[in-house]
Amino acid sequence: MLSPKNPVRYFISYNLRKILRSISYYISKNSWADKISDNELEYEVFKHELPIFRDFSEVDWKLFDNKRTNLEIAASKVNKILIEPGQKFSFWKLVGNPSKSKGYLPGLTISQGQPAVGIGGGLCQFSNMIFFLTLHSDLEVVERHHHSFDIFPDNDRKVPFGTGATIVYNYKDICFYNPTSKTYQLCFDLKDDIFYGKLRVDKTESYKYSVFEDSCGFLMEYGQYYRTNRIMRKKTDLNDNVISLDELFKNKRLCMYKPEEIDK
Image 1 (cartoon, one colour):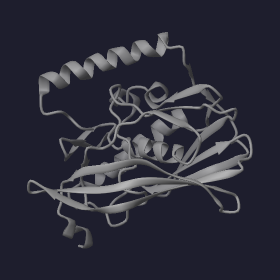
Image 2: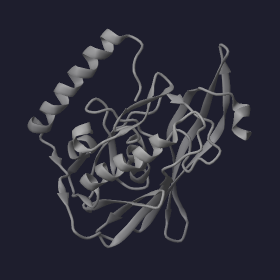
Image 3: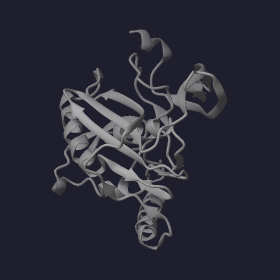
Image 4: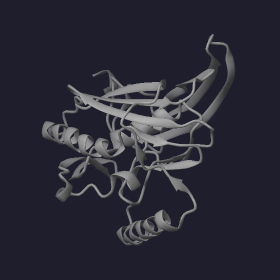
């Protein structure tokens, strides 16, 4: 969670957007995904996994344990959700306010580029997972907020840098739309210390997507380091023949560490 430097502007913007979003849930013409299936759809589009615990010396280990609880509670609201043709998915519409009264615990959040603690902390790992899964499909992301900082030197990054999605209830959401004739499904599970995610579909696909980075590096400007790259997506048929290769977006994020720390 990232907070602007101007507290007055943040307060007004934050609360106004929360009000407008709540209203939009009821007056929007969009059909919102809200049906949970008992079973998984037949075909797998893409699967991914992320470690819940990370080796960050700056972070209290208990916060990762709490994150696991937070992910379990949120996953119970989203697991096996169906996104039918023409429907729109909203993380916060399904999960609701991650409050203490619902069992959410203090977890790791980010405030102005620094680690902080907040109720429901750690749910950004959920939105990161959802965003990365959707990038491997024909689903159209209509709302996603990137992380403004690269906080930790991460030697074991599981996804390309810059493919995360920050969320703040009910201010910043991860939303996508299904423009296809297929029904998609998000499935999640936590086993041991791994968070698993799958995107499934009801019809066979004749192609697949892969997402990767290039032009990776560090840039110094005005005495500060920035991490940069391009996120690319390749579409291939089932015989690995390239159908298309596109740049999805570019990243340039302020580093809260020095590049040489990556190898330590």
